[in-house]
Amino acid sequence: MLQTINPATGEKLASAPALTGDEANAVIERIADGFTQWRNTGYTERAQILRSMAAAMREAKVELADLMALEMGKPVAEGLAEVEKSAGCAEYYAEKGAEFLAPEPLESDASRSYVQFPPLGTVLGILPWNAPVWLALRFLAPALMAGNTCVMKADPNVPATAACLTKVFYSAGLPENVMANLPVTTDLVGEVIDHPRVKAVSFTGSSVAGQKVAARAAAGLKPAVLELGGSDPCIVLADADLDKAAEVVTLSRMINAGQSCIAAKRLFVEASIYESFTESLYQRFASLKVGDPRDPANNLGPLAREDLRLQLHRQVSETIAAGARCVIGGDLPSGAGYFYPPTLLLDVQPGMAAFEEETFGPVLSVTPVANLDEALALANATDYGLGASIWTRSQAAMDKAIATIESGQIAVNGIVKTDPRLPSGGIGKSGYGRELGPQGIREFVNTQQVWIA
Image (cartoon, rainbow, N blue to C red; front, side, top):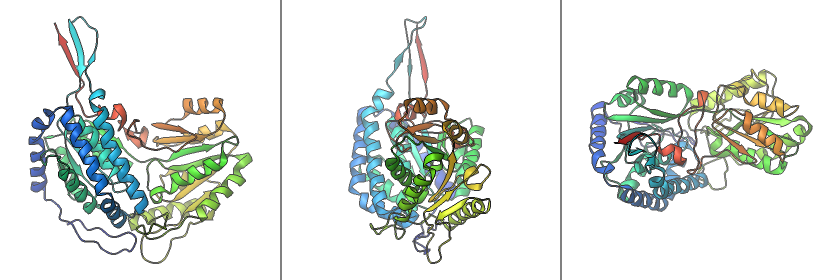
């Protein structure tokens, strides 16, 4: 059984049945059997089904948002926005998928030669709990539009959300032999990856788990896309729009109670504005309301699990012990639920836990820097490489940062975010491969050369 705990109360929710190994294999066989028919439907029919899925998600958005609030603590307003974004992703690939996968002519010694992009087969998506609807669509929409069939292994924290989402898809006309939910316990994931009819793997999660998934997929010579952890740097220079920067940095760090891979986590602020800017952050952190995620008055819900909260508190405590200043938050709340307060750590330096490790919660580490060169050196002083951002009005500073920062995506004077129109992914411990955009839909296809004499 899959047992979920309401992170706002610590109380058990209704348990969900987990599949045995044999039952999981039967589901995979059913979805693999549906591949030939699905790949032959053509882009027009697939697009129509994706649009129907988008409409059905919007109709079910209140139920989906409430389930996310119950199972992993996402505030309802954020959950509603997540469903809307997910529906938009389905519509985007319905509109653009055929264009992205159109054959590309190439000159050669043939009378005609080109590259085409047929689907691979059945793709396994191993998904986390922090954005269970969005991350499902980020995987499913391009894979399905490309003609693959999909098996979705959702995180054990969100079984009801995954089951509801699957039911919504079926109600929209997605054939039950094209996509299936796979509620299995973590110990069976390796066997699922090994299944001979699973042709590729998409994984979103921690770097440690990603290494295990990558090794298992590689052992079967199966392509994989890994979107892993991040310790994203954000640079704020003195000439920036400081009010806007403080607003966006706070949003980036606090959305989903800080449980976001692409949140700004290590902030580097030019020394001349360090005190005033951190005071502005303090005021914004202090105004946030922490509480029941089903209450629209609250900005911040709980962390998803107690072990995640204890891990975060260890990082905060070790960072303070190493010399950082904690100006707000930093305490482990008493009472029910897995709440953690908005926490602002100042004067964080390399070697401290909050600098070296990914902090997955509402904790921001801030470091003063003398200039852009020092900020860029510190920004790149990490094994991660998911996202990064810089705030400045200087074109020269923008250009230098864009040319220097080592990460999968860079935002200038804005928030690092995922957008169906743009590729997303990382380097180093943040993974490899890309999701979304025209690049994402080509991850799970066969780039097939055709040569005609």
